[in-house]
Length: 226
Image (cartoon, rainbow, N blue to C red):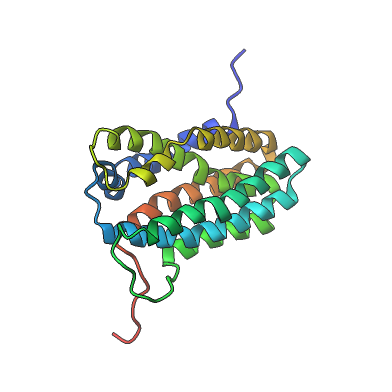
């Protein structure tokens, strides 16, 4: 008898091309070897802080719709981590004096940031729980997968300028949370929702890639006056 392939294993395989693009991403390559422009890194942190606010909302919505207390507790705890713990680290890095100062204006979500957050919040709020869970998983899994390679490469660079941030990519606690998130998605998977779950997972995976790409070029909104 052939082994049953889990939903998450299939979803991972189906997004192989996008994940290969993540591995080629200039932002991550330059972050790994310490050559990333500090101004680009500031832009990334500002956008990531805005993203995490929306991601925390999506996780909170998912927690409210979870089928049992264990799942609800995990998603709620993850929402707290995104909203408080990770955002605190962003603030520390932005204000530490290592990066160039901001322009004084409050950061505005880029088109990619806004699109990604809108996808997650809308899916978590209106789609079936299983589809919402599939949508939030790439933020755990793609990030953790890229983090292992990033941390290994950055660890070879003496005096790496972004060492504190790189360490967060390969945090054992985050990898454990990723494994739990995968288990919850697999537990929620249903044949009648499978294609919708794959679509939600694939869209979020593409946004993971685009988030790094858009940060590298410091994406903003075009000026309608020009």
